[in-house]
Amino acid sequence: MNTFVLMWRPVISSYKMSDLEREIGEYPDVWFNWSVWEYTKAHEDDRFFMVRIGEGKTGVVMSGYFTSEPYEGTDWSGKGRRTFYMDMEPDFIFHPEKTDIVTTEQLTAAIPDFDWTGGHSGRLLTDQQAEKLEALWEAFLAKQDDSVFDEKDIKARRLFLPK
Image (cartoon, rainbow, N blue to C red; front, side, top):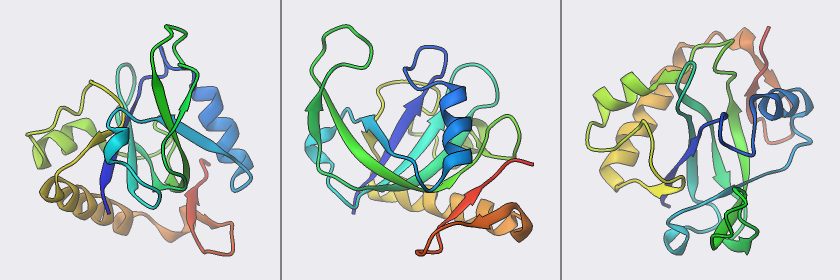
């Protein structure tokens, strides 16, 4: 299984903060897809982490798994570039302005050989980087109070719902 980092900058993305907020409220009846830069290395069941970059509180806002193979679609930016997407199912979503998140500073300290502040979305981590990220994520999740999680689906996946 590979692990990919999806970069999200709401100011320029077609996916806005209001989309994240709406989908948190509608979970699990939501559908996600995202463009993946290194799509030739990506496969169904690979892991992803979405990192908010740019303005505001930055860091990991979502984790989950890809639920499709890459497929070509219309460029989200409108620039006519060749773009490949993957469907995805989140297992955790955190609102970056209303909750704690794993910050870009924490990511950089733990995995300094990856640029957590920008670059293409859908970049593949090395196995060593992925192991460090999973350990950081698991430690973060373990510190969360169980009362902030809402069991929403039959798979017992958890989703954070802001207070």
